[in-house]
Length: 260
Image (tube, rainbow, N blue to C red; front, side, top):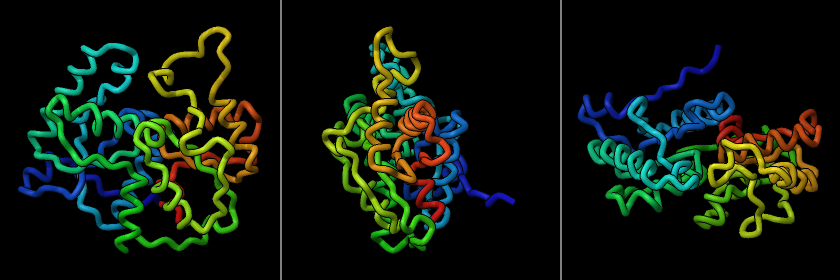
């Protein structure tokens, strides 16, 4: 029988007169994509395990508008953003945690100019915080001796210079962390940024995800770790293109930690 996860909504907590420690922003991928839902569940499992007082917006959460903005539709972006800001400000939300670097970047850097000022944290940063404060302890045996390489998501790494938190969290698994030749500032995109997730490559374009997966496979990993649902999809497809799905697994850091 699967573990029962507790996921309260802001509406429920407000009715009880309670303000949660964090709002968990699930994001479009984490809400609708079957693979990304597993990342969402893994992160909720971590929050439950660490007794974090959190809530989600549930049906009141809408797309951040990231895709609209990257595709050049500023009007649609502002409409979506203003709708979300109205809801977040009505609930007096102070701190937001998300597993999606695209949402992280948009909420953190693009909402303030529209009146949405929040302390926005990526889930790898929050997991590191929980471990550092002793609220979450890992057994560290599940992945001991495994080779794990981490792919830096563009909107977490180069756009926001968050490089250390994911790596420090991965080290807690006691796995052998191996770096790709192109990593941190020189990391290659997975190919899904800038709304590219939702379109096929232009004629003559190479598949960036296949190239990036090649970078990862050169480290001879057992696991490719990601910190973004879109990167997860692109790297998984890249593994299939290289016909390596039998020997290499793609897992989000939340899944690695939840399993530990």
